[in-house]
Image (cartoon, rainbow over all chains, first blue to last red; front, side):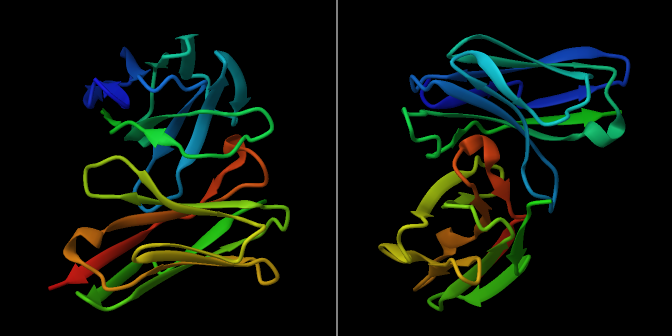
Length: 116
Length: 112
């Protein structure tokens, strides 16, 4: 596997279920991100991990819980979601260099989540 | 709050013609402006980016122009081809990937 891989690609869950999304990057990057993509809306940054430490949490509801056990893996744990949480969840990674915090984001193909 | 407005939301052009997508940002401290292309069912991919110390950047058929005074930047695609059909997203940041503010996207349709 190369690049950024996400599993599962599709997930259907009830509002009382608990599930997790997984992301793995094979690029040796030091930062990983979770984004929410809804139709005709801007990408919404949910969480950022840099060197396995969470550096950003954009007021995401607590029913979303991230976990970054190492620099190559990122999880998004889901519980008691709402139908409006249905969306495409994209994982991304990037290499942040000293003094340069902008640069190409490498995205996974996303996990399409449907909450019934 | 900070935002990025992207226009048009849908653009349909004849194959071979040029396409222009425009974004306007609100934070004058923004200094990094990437463009991402997302084909149907695929991941977004960076196609070109520009930093605030230059006014224009080209890469084959695509170019980006930046007007810091007016706080807008544009993506230009010349000699459009069917494979250019996709959704294009602009973004602006004032120093960090954590601070990227995204536009809502433009669906580009290339008519044969």
